[in-house]
Length: 188
Ligand SMILES: Nc1nc2c(ncn2[C@H]2C[C@H](O)[C@@H](COP(=O)(O)O)O2)c(=O)[nH]1
Ligand SMILES: [Mn+2]
Image (cartoon, rainbow, N blue to C red; front, side, top):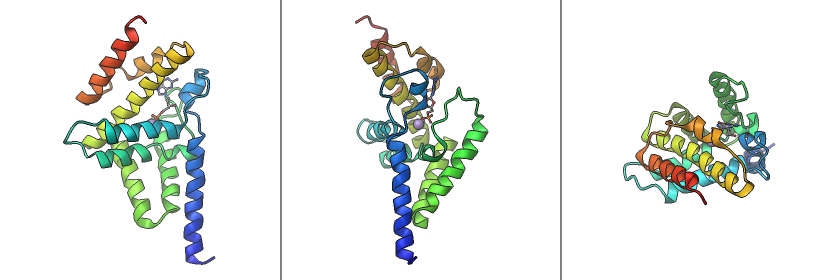
């Protein structure tokens, strides 16, 4: 197969994996019996737009946050959406997802593949202001989605608030969390 055809087939394989994420229900909601649970892609979509349009901290590189949001769960297209309740150690989850990210990176031109791997590692390490912020968005998107399901499907999803209690690190997202909890606890 000509080099150009191989490159195009790599893009097509990448497209297929992105298609998996568009229809991969987030396990946490499936476990709780949520009707029509959001997809992993939908989760990353809201995080990316919050990074782009709702981030007010001038010291945060929004473009980097958009990229981190869109890359952080890419590996789930191959390994699935593993929850903290599935009995998979953090080390094992990291190894599985790292292998998946390496596979995904290999489908695309080297410079792009390297960027995906570097972004994923930056998110996992959580040592840069952008990765700390996007990890906050990861948890905030989840509790906001939990609140949306509680109100639209009359459910109790307290465990998602409990499991993220005190894990938020940025002032901006902490203020969002406090406001969300206030709304949630105010009688309708
Ligand atoms: N049932 C629960 N599921 C949870 C909890 N915390 C996270 N999760 C789920 C949400 C996702 O499906 C998955 C991990 O999401 P990432 O975006 O971190 O890959 O785990 C919980 O407290 N209960
Ligand atoms: Mn996530």
